[in-house]
Image (tube, rainbow, N blue to C red; front, side, top):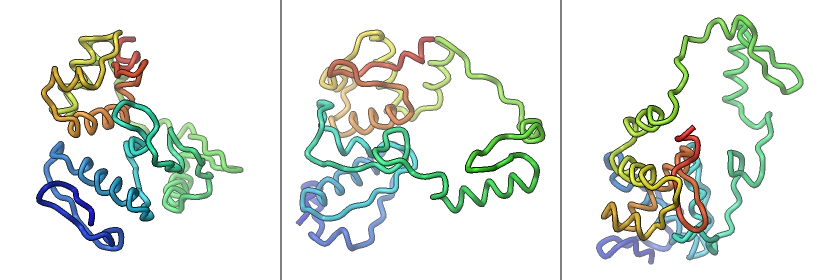
Length: 205
């Protein structure tokens, strides 16, 4: 049996069942799913995670940032162990083909290049601010849990803060704290530094 918490136990064949995890943003859906996957891996079940955001790499890490027992290969993405080839995405190829038909890109020999017409068709986008304005820009767009964590790290910058100190200062439980840190790391807003966590240098440029 897979014991997720005191009142929730799933059968050992949960990997072959269908479940839905529903809740508000920041309520712990990803953490619960991660806990289920950890239990399945401990039970030596096969698991595949489709992770378009890039936060599940945390399965390979212990709470102290060291490598866990799970030797999980990651396909593609910034932390990928195995790159995905340019020809591996049918949906992507369909999008590229539509852009070619409109004259917005040239795509030859696997290289996609925006044309002058494609660049002209882009809407005008203001560049991101810098320094404190950039910090405020990110903070204003984060859910409350991630915002509180990032504010603590910004105040401490350039020093790193241990996970235990973050728990003490924010009063978030370890599970919530780690979930928030994973999401912030996926956005490249925080980095590991000498066993602790600190705000990304890019927030202060």
